[in-house]
Length: 479
Image 1 (tube, one colour):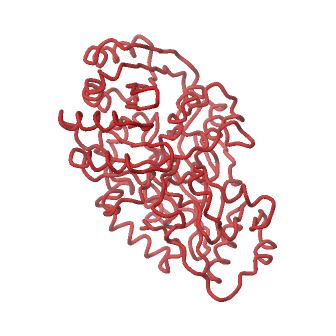
Image 2 (cartoon, helix red, strand yellow):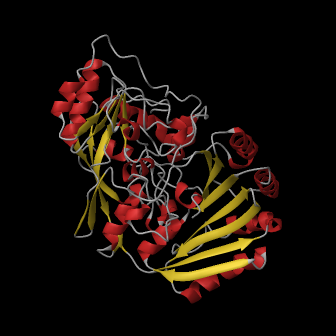
Image 3 (cartoon, one colour):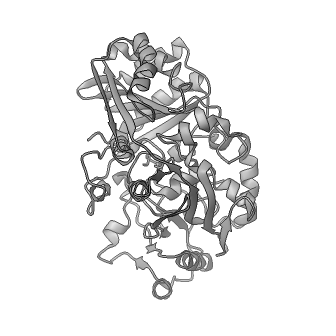
């Protein structure tokens, strides 16, 4: 199983912070927290240091952040639990962190104060074309539950990512070109704000906050507890895998970027340039909603430009199985596509950075990317096609501004070392600009407001001032 498949999107999985203690923590006031009082006030569970469950409760997906030790983890089972937790930290001056799936690239799903964990709020319900999804639901459960009704929502690839973080940051995924970002199908969100109010937000109720929750990033405006999405009917999908030798890397990158973003909406693809201990590799993977004959016609021009692949695997499968394939757990059951100890998917140490490409790479840019990937690894560049339905939404219609981007670029490095990441990101900046994806949050970025939010940053700051004027939620890169 190739874990790069399920580390790509959306929501999904974490990069190494400059320091292992998040910078948004603040010293508590002199008043000692009455943890027993908080525990009595929760329907859910409060886990403290010394409790037998603490070792598991404090962990994120990425072991790099295991040294961070929160003072408590509140497993909330309702919006009222979240409100009680926020009241507790407000009264005592404790830092607070919201956690859904625990995949923050910078480790900002934890901290040294109270972690408000919504993973138990994970129910997925479907009725009359709408899905109501708890913020802690894992993507594999969203896919599998909705598939039983013959519907789905566009979402990321990593099966263990929580839907909350994914949707709040936008949500790029394998069906985005057909149906838009995850946040584009969001009709309402229930959120607990810093002052403890439980608000239902949509186009009519708190529309400014609703706008910010569609691409403004998690952990900024409150703790989201549930989402209501429009669904789309699902069908069997074609899944394809094409591989070429490394000598074709430049040709593949040139051909793919001129083909994938402008393909029909039914076709999504990703280009992987990978350097493993076994050597470098070029791979194009994707899904297609039409017939096999139609897919063959669509693949023909890009294959003609690159040359005959060394391997070609195309097959038709169910929607749910296709999501499992893209998520790297195709041979597992739905239950097994969960994190250990309940499932079979382990944790992974890695770091990542990103760009969003608003223009194709020039030949010089192609050569630079190929040369950097060819350095000793293990590392990868994962390039996901955008365009289609994503591009037909105005940049200011939601907080996600990158509607004109042709594709997203994720630089991925195994382990805790960030030296190659910084090198390739610097090398590619002259060719790709300074745009970045907030769900691939990057603690190295200097002008991160412009990179993540572009012209939407000013409006996001206004929403922040209205709903969290005292800045209870203090991410290092917080709006």
